[in-house]
Length: 175
Image (tube, rainbow, N blue to C red):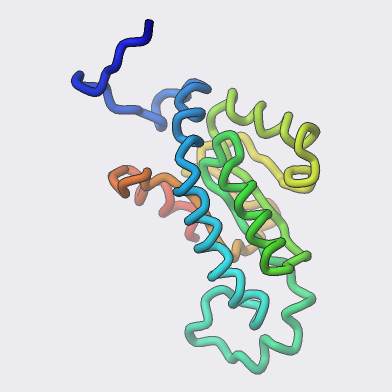
């Protein structure tokens, strides 16, 4: 019989120090509402890209962008890709926005989760076949060939936006 641990203090997860076990990812992935909201947010962001060829329209000459937006690939990077739920939603959001030219990159430091991602390339090839995966700590990872990333997607803030380490993790990639 399983014992309910709601009334006991828990040791906080330390994903920077420890590789999380599969059952922890399983627990995270059960929050389907969170991932649906991520997809909705991506659809809103990608609608700008579909229309103008850019996600951030501040200080951009929209007329110039309209002329060649179909030629440029959307480059999206999921940091802390885990076992792939954000990548799944990213691909679905692109399909919903009818964005066909996309480059998806997933960065994961947990070797066990990374192997799950690699197996998804075969098991769910309609979603993961063209995704580039990198086994690396996001704080040390450098995009290949110095490509510019249009959007970084991560759930490092947690369901309640309470992960105080996330700024330090995400700062490095912003360069």
